[in-house]
Length: 85
Image 1 (cartoon, helix red, strand yellow):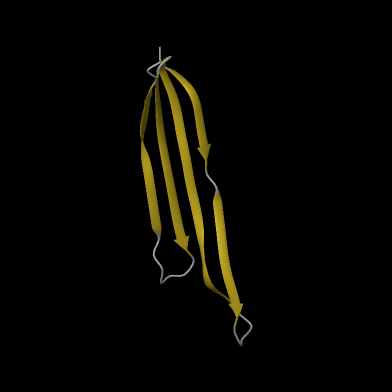
Image 2 (cartoon, helix red, strand yellow):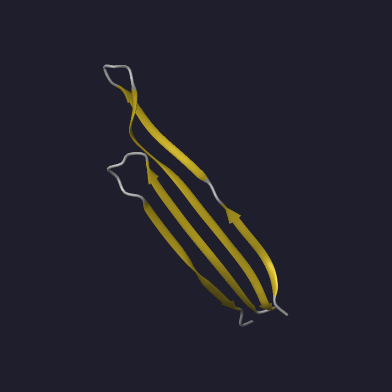
């Protein structure tokens, strides 16, 4: 009988920005980005010798400057483990 062995989920959020002052004493962001990462996985045991694992990894890079592009990377899949012994 299939059963859920484990479930993991993580959503860290990071933001890095670099600012500099110009002659008018106004702070402007000169570089930096916000990074959002989603990592999720679930493990299922179909029998004592067969395990499935479903996973999803997604990373979003959102730059603070308008002349840079948003970048999204997604990785997901299924893993099958069969024990022969």
